Image (cartoon, rainbow, N blue to C red):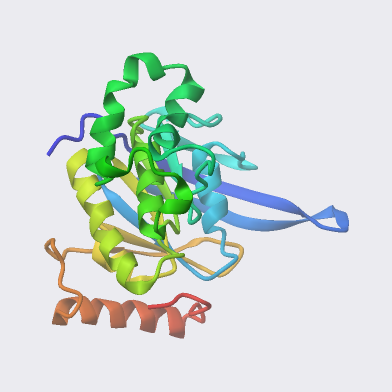
Length: 263
């Protein structure tokens, strides 16, 4: 296992509020005193009801927004803005429709002004995500799963120390979603990048994660953290998997947090 390129992530007492539309003098608290840490090379999932602040938290870690109080750190360095060291993959692949697969993967290198010295890595990352034969294809030629592979390659080619995944498989059909879960795990095991996955899918969280963090309804707080000690590759039909799934869903239900968290 090589975790040399990965970094630990620490979130400490983070609060974030937003102005209420049409009532600028008031604010709505989105996340309230969030604290957790992720060890270098771990894959951790975040689940919770809609509106609990999951995507807000991801944007704060990405440096796209700033907390009202508290701090966020990658290793010992405070997060003060966006950085290529923190990759972000959304539910929508957000590919440039006028660019080929190769050019889409190169886009981040172009933006950083390092394409010339890093161009040789593009073929490596296309092979890594299984798209070597599609380098000249345009996004409209690709399936949803293939498009998401391009988005993953585009993020990974910057060698992020932390990869943030905001419902990256949520728009896929069930069969493609399961296949892509295996693809993400294969990439994670190959690169051992620290990954933080936001998902509504409890099965996905159990199948993929070292640990699951559960948030409360808004304002979002950490409700519970669950270590997943099942050996990989995991059997979704095993007694231990189903028992854990039942325990999590029962906890969400009786805590009044079932919301739109789906299995």
